Length: 89
Image (cartoon, rainbow, N blue to C red; front, side, top):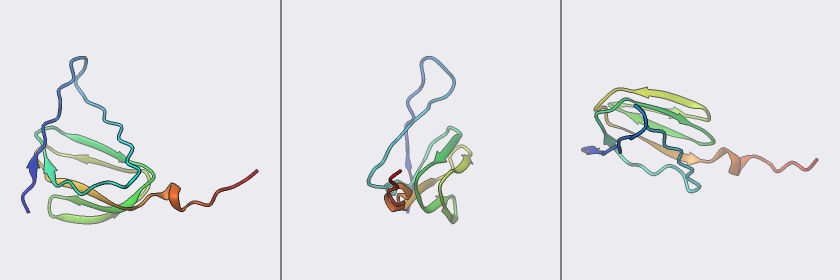
């Protein structure tokens, strides 16, 4: 499977771009690459991480630094908040 080239919008006021995505239905599988470095912190989710030719599990507070032009994606299996019990105090 070939990855698609993702165009990361340039920031007018800085040298980096912050994306805060809240995905209630999980992380969609989107195999892509781009010429920028990427630092990804994944919270409240668990599933599989696909980076280059490596597939591995990830969980809450997964932090990954990716190099330029490295194909990658994440695929969530579940949200941790959905599984945690409701506590009444």
